[in-house]
Image 1 (cartoon, rainbow, N blue to C red):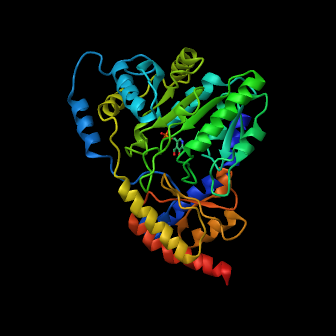
Image 2: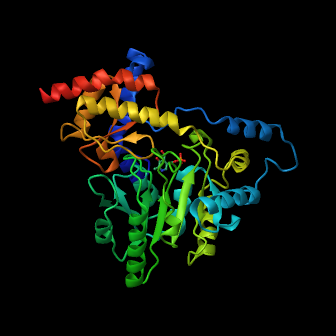
Length: 394
Ligand SMILES: Cc1ncc(COP(=O)(O)O)c(C=O)c1O
């Protein structure tokens, strides 16, 4: 092969996910897309809010010198100011435009953050199950992803994180609300995590960063709120995007924010600005920066996802599936009725239901369903879900 061994290995390692995707495409071609129940992708199915289109139209009609020119690498100052103002209330810390770097989605934010802090061989700890790309993101910048188990309900296990810390630990990377489990980490657990990282950092004489990946922050149910991790630990970086809460993942817009009291605040912001440039992003899309800057605080109608959550939870529970009801995001992570989750996902495919094995997220024995789909997809898939579990139990 004439491509890098590292890339070859990543491609080979994810081949069953690719196979599943290809199988889904084949099934849709054979049976018609409407007859295949696709829960495999976290692609929000709601339209963006009307405010988004209004701001977009206004931006498209606006003309002026240098509106589509290169800009400062961290983004337009007025947009970063708008983001900082909004976040200061949302997270109860005083952020300024200098703390914000506009990025190409949360993925871009995570990569500029990791590029900024990691030296070769540094370790990044993440609670498992976790977003499948984290391993590649850490490795992109010479880092090594290590996992720490969570509790049976997927909440943080602080002892497991403590046990995973070594003299090479540079960061703990959390994601709340979580993909794939939907779990939200409580304020108490974030405070305990902050205390642990302060203590370990002192003992090891190095700063251990907390990076929080929060693209699902606004997609929460039952009146819950995601606590501010910034209030729990100052050596911290937020990575997030508008992909899910404005339903615009294709537009690639998000940001990274550094805690205003972080010891190396200026260096981190400067490093992320440089990383935005040298990773080849240069800057986040200009048009989208101005659009999101104008509609801070606007989000999609979460009640539609709440309805889908209720439909899928009651349907699967009636069939006999076991799961933790997700307090946020739009994923369900039920237990596989047989130990081999890849095998179970194949059984679902025979019923034209597409799901992702939990093994792909470091959560074997489970499978992930993205319920950001039409209500009809959920309702019409239920007989298939029932046939599969009945067959296993009979
Ligand atoms: C947990 C998590 N982090 C990051 C991302 C990447 O988000 P974006 O599309 O904004 O880059 C996703 C996308 O699904 C995600 O689920």
